[in-house]
Image (cartoon, rainbow, N blue to C red; front, side, top):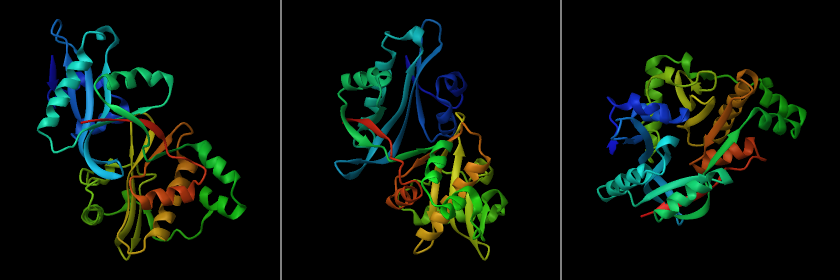
Length: 298
């Protein structure tokens, strides 16, 4: 049996959800289909997806349902639960404005079965750039090894010109709320619409705002997932020519990461906007975005 998991039932299925997705599932940003064993009424599988996001299809931004995770407990595999969850999702597509379903499968033999499963459902796969960079402490060290002394000092935190850059946790609540609403208003894609307006939601050491005369002009916000990873959820400015200030914000962010975050913590940069990709590539020119197998179903 497959159900649409409600908040009331969520606790039964959360152990099957990856740590980095639990917050999105609990907040309602991601949706959850659940497989239930009729023999013992146990939660045995989940399919996590979001809808309304724009994915590049043949070079055009297209509204798609995006599958983020599908999992069935080993004891209950080969009993059709994964197929039943996919059937429910495929049926939902009929009443959805999305043009189809998309799934990204990483490269590596451990993911070949996932590609085979989705292919059996008619997903057509191609190699795609998922527009994300993964930054580690070793990445920072490598970049500094290739920089001259002055630039390396800036990445390490030696830059002197940081006036107006503060942690968002130090902003008055009303100033932060007004800032995030203003950023949403000027960002027409809607990618910030679901972000919480509570500043304590964001990782304080790396969530930075540039402030001019008490008004936020640029902001970088990071979430801390349960798998010891930081994810960039906003990099935005209200300035007409924001490049220099946003670069300073991003450089300050990674200075703080390098100095104070645990060695094993990584940073995920989803670079959906051309501007943010250019900034990240300028700061980390030797880091490539992640290449995946992207499957399409319609």
